[in-house]
Image 1 (cartoon, rainbow, N blue to C red):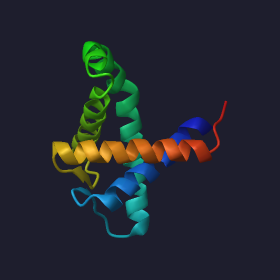
Image 2: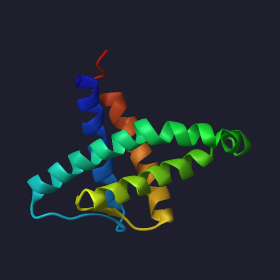
Image 3: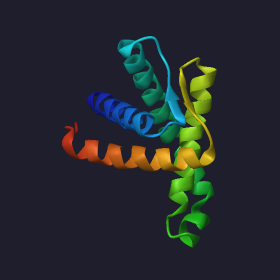
Image 4: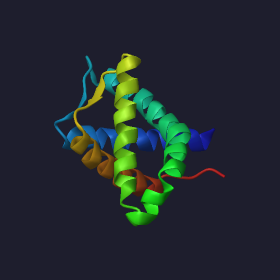
Length: 125
């Protein structure tokens, strides 16, 4: 349970950095508290997408992983971010990613920030 909370907070932080750096990734809300709540909910959705959908996509695209020496990972991560944006819209969360290339850059930022946060945040057994 603690590991889930830490990963969710790390994802929320990484999403916040992507929102801050990229104009076409937007988070709207009435106040800071509401935005933080939305970020946490989007982080849960993002975590679920990465836990459920991403492994299936990776298995189906395994030959492309080999062919591109892993560079297809950027595309898969971008698609997971776009799926998260679509689900956030369906769940009436005010988070939106506009366009594929924005999603690619956003996914790269989120991956780097998540990795950096995983280094400094405690990890439960």
